[in-house]
Image (cartoon, rainbow, N blue to C red; front, side, top):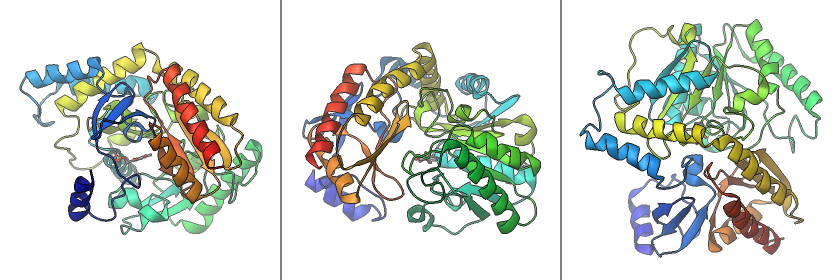
Length: 418
Ligand code: PLP
């Protein structure tokens, strides 16, 4: 492994983060477990950054992909009809909750957001957009422009005029310690003030994650997007819900994160969990909005036959096995178990379904808990704006036994570093 690490360092850019003091090479996976090149097995609660929604090597997905590969057609381009693509688009459109929906496939969440921003700014003929502090939307110039996290934002110049709204966290900042009711009032005041003071002319859209992922699994109260949308509608501003992390039933309560807010966005973007590792993402929007793009737009690989074969198998499996309900049930076990841990380094346990964050007292404690989990056979994520969050987004088909096993490892790590 040391040899591979030094080769990695010799050829990859230094700004690419890599996990762990002793990074690991994962070589096999089955269910919710992976094995590294030393033969050590781990329960995976980060699932390729919430992407392996059905874990590893699920026969239904493997067989769907193998069937497609056996046709000899890995790729044809969207200049030709692709049955798997049309079928998946129909399913996603039906599930999206967006009336008269159109679907455009891309290869990554970044590209999906890029496409949504392209649609919205075209539709409103304006390059002024609203975003949310601490939000993350991708790594191209446009998506970095709407990302409100300095560490990521520093890497590109903005093609937009962006104004940022205050965001989720109630531990610090504008919303510190506020009740839901007060929070909603303050968020609407903030939006009105931002519109009145920092924008000029038409504003195209607001892009927002229902639960901020990279930002540390923080969120505002349910109803926040509806409260904002009332104001947005007064000004004809479109709402984009970035569901890259919150889609496919992950929050347990709803299929999409936006549904906790009692509002329907004009555009939603999806990625990660639908491909279970295959590059599959896209944007869904009302025809009336999406058809306003002028000229031609096309993605060579977006909605490719292999990726959409996987996507159909994944979506069918999630629906047929009601994994949204599983996320609520198994996530509930984890949330309750973690909230019961009495450790002075835990500031807050937050989340919904199988999207769970633990806020700790310091970056050092977060790193220590993170390393102990790995030592004891559990992979989790870390991050957040302040580097003090342990993040978890296990496969949606995680079992109760696996949840309890992971909980035991986490509990012991939280006590070990207390
Ligand atoms: N939007 C959100 C909310 C994300 O969490 C991410 C990635 O983590 C992206 C967009 C970018 O997606 P991708 O890495 O597939 O480009």
